Length: 254
Image 1 (tube, rainbow, N blue to C red):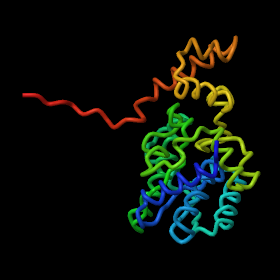
Image 2 (cartoon, helix red, strand yellow; image 1 turned 180 degrees about the horizontal axis):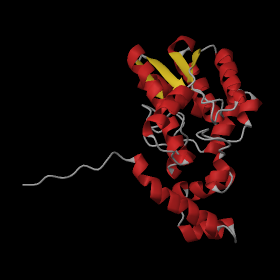
Image 3 (tube, one colour; image 1 turned 30 degrees about the vertical axis):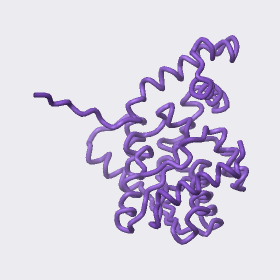
């Protein structure tokens, strides 16, 4: 990938979509949001980008918060740390019922997006999301949470390409090499949850969507032992396809 060309395209996209307004984004201390913050700063300038760092004591390592603050300072963008622990605990207490880690994790993602839209409404900003193509195709995001942004600048880049972009942008290795995690519950790791590394996921997704190979052709191309992984991803894609479309509307006829 020609990262210089792609970075320019994404920066132009951000500039056009924001249209003279400011932008707000969540900065987690991970590679996706780091790349989005860097590209947003290039597109809009330091004064028009605001980062919210939204840790939860139940699941956010201190190192993530420190990395996010450090990057925001390095980029020179506005940033604010808002600890959401009290909000999540109040919500879970009001429900009077313990939830699964997935249910509680989705609440955290939606609270974070609520905070971003609160600032966006108050300050007239556009909410920039950090979902990448791998996550979007798999539906590996929270509906109305991290998937609820106004624009998704790196939604056309596979996770592997995001890491390549991070290298080109000069994102600190400490962030770039961190194991991917949405940080929605303690010790959550994306590749463990998905059952395979992103390098393999991206190879399968590339074969399915860019090369337009059939499932059998992908299995043949990747070799023996790949069938389980390919089928697992295809089933996940089908199961989560609803996340990428607007809610169905009942058709009323005469």
